[in-house]
Amino acid sequence: MSGILYTAQTVKSDGFWLRAAMLFTLAADYFLLIYIDEFIGLCLFCCAQTAHHIRFAADGKFLGRAWPLNPRIIIQISAGALIIILPLPFDTVTKLAAVYAAGLICAAAASVKRRMRLKSRQSFFAMLGMVLFLCCDINVMLFNLTGSGAVYEAAYVLIWVFYLPSQILLSISEEKNNHREVNQCTS
Image (cartoon, rainbow, N blue to C red; front, side, top):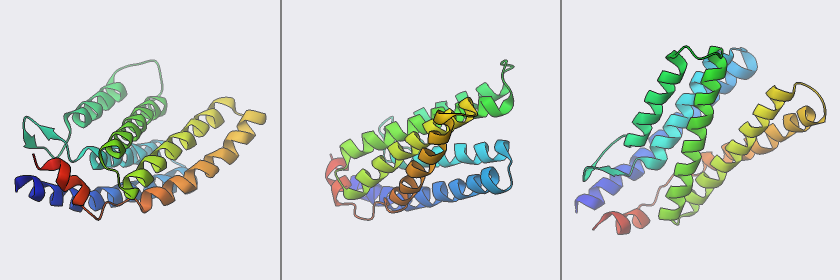
């Protein structure tokens, strides 16, 4: 019975974390594309990826009990804070971009793991959305590192080719039906 109750809470929180991630993404886009503040934009994108990661790992258990934050997420947040604080030979925006990249990779990996556990259409949309999000940001990296030329031009186009579908897929990926999780959580 506790597995069923826990599962109902998980599905309910899925929508909360999805909306939080989408709101952080929207705010990050505003600060990167309109207000032109890379630091705030990257901070908000880090929050978005953390919300996605929490969403995909929220049904994990720690020490036999339901745990709202997976210990890997706590380690990810702590390591990110250390990278930014430590006196490394990079500027703050570069360090923050590295933290964001690590968060995105972790969230994408968590979405793949969730897809393997849940065989729902929504988990497929979430996984595909995160993979496209990762492809988008690989092109953002190429765009920023090259500065000009054919790779620069192609990366600029591919950013948007991957970004828009990723956001659409993520926005429709909320788990609303919990029958698949109930079967796996009741043991």
